[in-house]
Length: 380
Image: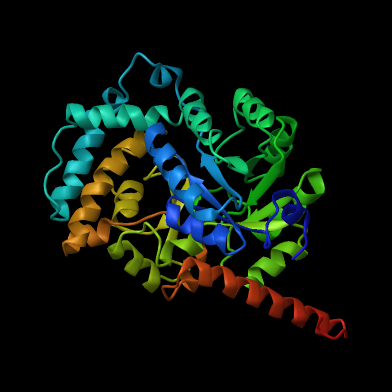
């Protein structure tokens, strides 16, 4: 395949795979695509270990790193001298304890000092300073891309990447955001529609991508609602130079998805997702579950906290929920969920990540052949 993105990154297929799992990243890169590791799950030391593991397995083939630097974090919360856990109100902790009791998961003990320290560490990674530390680690490895998942990348992050000769990508959900990102020096735009898993806007991929392509003068990757080669062909027909996928890797053999959640995904339809602030504090598409329903609809819900506080509270609770779900607790299985897009309705079997890449390329070729036939041209 030959697109501007293939030329820019030296890949066989313009298929970018976002995952928090190093095994998925390495498998996609080795299959001819471009794996991108989500860094927010790791401390700088852990990220260095993960990237070293990938380096040893991809043989110099290109891969990237994605960092999360959301805007809108209250200055007092972001202050280095404060403990983030102290900003989580008691009524929100009490509501989680109520959910644990209602669904038979157990009680929610007060945040211990160790969990408070964990909350501070994870929360700081989502500040410009914390993300900068992850970027510093990433740039010590032979990465081919740094992506900013929420908001414009800090100027210093872009400058450091540029000095290292590493392109910067940014995810956007509107045309205006795309223009701002390009003005900030971004090299690649990922136009992500509302169908996507995780943090999304409200404009669908089919509508968003051609508008962004027309508005910016850098390569555009399409994201949201792309899990097979037909959707990949449609994205390129809209003017994108490639695709950025996340949800399709969640049901692969290598994925980090807990087995109990993976089973829910395999059984889900495309109507079984919801954009909810209940997991991170910002609208994020995920499996609909008792967790999303209780936070969004229950009369006694205190409402989600702003990011990063809701994420810290939710992830701490979800870790316990998943452990209980894995042990067979039925209430925990109702509460358990994960970020996933509407393409979950297509994810009906477990495949190796490498097989997913090859299937998408074969389906892409078949879709292009059908389009040529419509034009009365023989397939190449």
